Image (cartoon, rainbow, N blue to C red; front, side, top):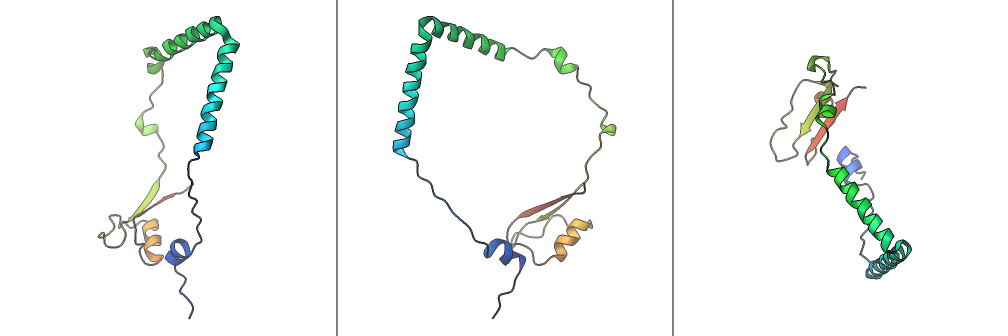
Length: 134
């Protein structure tokens, strides 16, 4: 007996899947920590006391620069367009609540809803379809 090929079977039940389970490596974590300690020691030796002090002052200057407020004239210099001049991209949407959750809220007469409703039985889980004509 042949099994009926339905969208649910084709896309959600029958496809093959691969599950990879990972486990953190304690040895790798120790190696990374050891390498970082070695890298920091080498950097301290390379810079010396004066280099570390210079790096600290550079860091403090960068923090102060980063925390400065954005000048108001920069924020207010952007031209805000009139809402009527903004062209909107038309999007058709259709929602399927899934089985046992009541009727879907989007039962409009647009072509997307008609296409989805004519495509077969409703899916057993929530799906939102969006269609953009480009």
